[in-house]
Structure formats: C-alpha cells, structure tokens
Image (cartoon, rainbow, N blue to C red):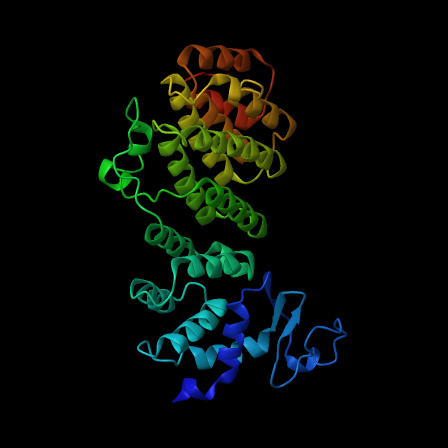
Amino acid sequence: MLYEAAPLVLKLFELIDQPPKTIEILPGDLEQWVSAELPLKSPQPSADFPFVFVEGNLGIPKKVLYTLYLTSVSVPRNADPHHAKAATCVTLLVNPAHQTALNTRKRLVLAGLLSPEKELEFTELLLRGPLDCAKQSVLWDHRRWCFGRLYDSLGAVNTQMPLPLLHGRYIPEELKLLPKIPQSVIRDEFRIIAHACQTYPRNYHAWNHRHFIVGICYALGGAINESSEEYWNILIEEHANLRRWIDLHVSDYSSMHSFGQTQKLIDHLVSSSFPCATESAISSLPSFSNHTLLLVTHYPSHESLWMFLRIALGQMPSHKRRLILEDMQASSTSNEAFRQTLRWFGYNNS
C-alpha cells in the first residue's frame, strides 16, 4: 500500500515523537541544505534523511514536507495505529486544521493507542512551531479535549458561595465537566498561550483558550480545599502578566477583553470574601480604571485602548464611574474617541 512505501513519513514521525525541542519549516528543498555546515554530532541532510536536526531542534525543508504531506493524506483512516499516528502527524504539520487527522488521533486516544500526554506534547510542538498552527481554533479545541481525557472533571465544586460569573460562560452542568488541571500544568499552559499570542498577534483563539484556563483557576480558587490558595495565586500572577502584556501590545484588543474578564472574576472572589482571596494581593497594582486612563493618555490614537477604558468604566461601581466621567467631561480634550466614551455613558461633552 502507499503508506508502506513512505519510510520518510515514518522517519519524520519518529523524530517528532522523541520529541524535539522545536520544529521549524525551512525554506526551499533538500538541495539547499545538503551542504549546510552543521555541528559534528548532527546528521547531515541527505536523500535518506532530508531533515536538519541540530541539538534537538528539527528543521524540515518546505518542499520535502509538502511531498511527504501528499503521501500522508492518502493513508486510509483505518490504517494500523503506528502508520495512522505517523500520517496524521505529518498532515497536521502542513494543515493544523485538518479535522479528519484530528479525529483520527482522537479515536486513537479513546482506544488507548495514543496517550493524552503525548498528544498534548505534540500539540504544544505545533503551537510553538509553524506560524499557522497558533491561530487554528480546532487545534486549541483539540487540546482542551485532551485535557478532558487526561484529568478528572471538577464535579460539584465545594465553595462558600456560588460562582455566578463563571455560570455566565458555563451553565452549572458544563462547569462540572471542566478538567481539574494541576497547578504546574496550568502555569505551563499560560506560557504556551503567551508564546502563541506573541507569534501570531491578536490571536483570538489563543485568548479564548486562556479564558478556559482562567475559568478553571477561578473555580478552584473559590473552592474550599488545601489547593485553592495556589490557584488564586496563579490567577493573580496572570492578572499581573496580562497587565504587562497590554502595556507592550496596545493594539491587541483580545488581550484587553481577556483582562476585563479576569478582573471581573478576581473582583468577585474578593468581594465575596472567599478564604484565599484578599485585596492585599492586588492592592499594590494601579486600579483598572487608572491603568486604562494612563494608557489612553499616552496612546490616544489607539481605538483599542478606548474600548479598554469602556470595559474598565463599565465594571466599576456607578459612583466611582460618575466621578471619573465628570472629570473627563470637565477636561478640554477634543479627541473624538474621548467624546465617544462620554456618550457611551450618557454624558454630553459639547
């Protein structure tokens, strides 16, 4: 059969299955790399090994990869597990949104022929590797599915008070199905998300995945158990990290929307007096509104920041919002975005 005549597909799969530290798709074909000067311990690219493998980092010439792709997509879905894993691995390197390949790998996981840990490892390589991978919604969804297979669900979270804000995104039945991901894995996941957002700016699907992880921290941070404080600490760390991210990416509205959602969850835990949630943890940071006002003052031409200010004002108590809006109304600023912000809240700056 066709897949039995494609040893290079299997060889590439074996390299990726190790796994390498990074994967990069290199320009050109094999001829451009056969004479490359590589470290002595690195295998020299050849017809039998058309890859660049240096210190655990894997480079695949683009034309070589596309040739292997044509072979891998021809492998039948009912192929033996080893060939199915190899073929779908190569397929997803070229087309990370290939739903048939992802579903084949799901079936392998369900059959116990592919571990969820290895699948998370593989998808991390994809998300950190080829540029197109980081923006694919189905790849992030596949990753969430793997978490659900690997970890027990939250079940009925035991808290002092209900968590209504999360119910705005998840109904109670869905909340119980969220995976109980360990703290160390959650920290790593935030790093993967940050890398994906840096690689592909304004990455809505990565930010949406981040909110999924934040929701787990929120639910477990409000729980009554010995690990709740650690999840609360992770939530606060990410709150600070996201604030710094916005300072450096003032056009990334997806990150600002995510910050507003995180701020809302933290405010709820603090105001509801959950055991682990204390105002001292965030008191050293500028307030949400002060932070956004500072940003729009320095970068008034960025519409995303004015939308960010609207989020901040909308989430604060009405009496505090009124004071800020009255100060804005009394100012001599003539910026149209400034005036639009006032109109959003019923103030006329004419």
